[in-house]
Image (tube, rainbow, N blue to C red; front, side):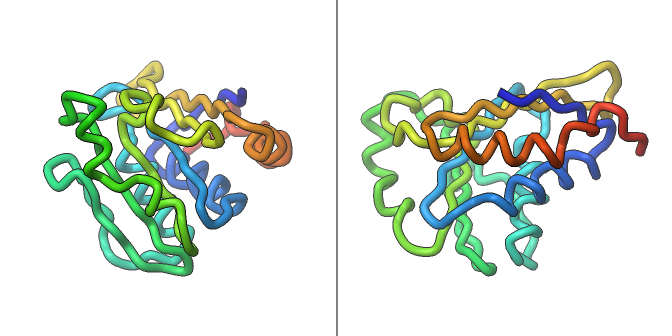
Length: 162
C-alpha cells in the first residue's frame, strides 16, 4: 500500500501520470472514493498520459466510455448498478484484451466479478477543498512489484507545494 497527498488538482493528474507510466495492456484500475473525491479527475490525468486528446468525462449515465490513444482506455462507472448480475451485461472480460487499460469508478462495488490482479486507487478529501489523500492498494504479484517501483518516484508527494 502506498499513501500519497495531492495538494491540488494538478497533483492528482501527476500521480495518475506516474501510474500510467507503469501500466501494461490488459490492466485494471479501480477508482474508489466519495462523490466528488476526484475519480474522474484521476481518469483525465491518466488518459492524457496515455495519449488521449479528447476530453474525458464521467461515464455515470452511459456506464462506459472508450477513448483511443497510445493505448485504448475503457472508462466505466458502476455506481448505478444495483445487482452484480448487471455486471455480466458489461462483457468485462472483453475489456481486458488487446492494447487497452480499464478504469472502473466505484469498482469496489463489483469486486467479486473482477480479476484478482488490479490496482485500487482510493481518493478521499484532505484538510481543504483542493487536497486529496490517495491510497494505492495493489492486488496480485504484478501490481505489488509495480507499486514498489512506483514508490521510488512518489515518496516526496506529501511535501509538494502547488
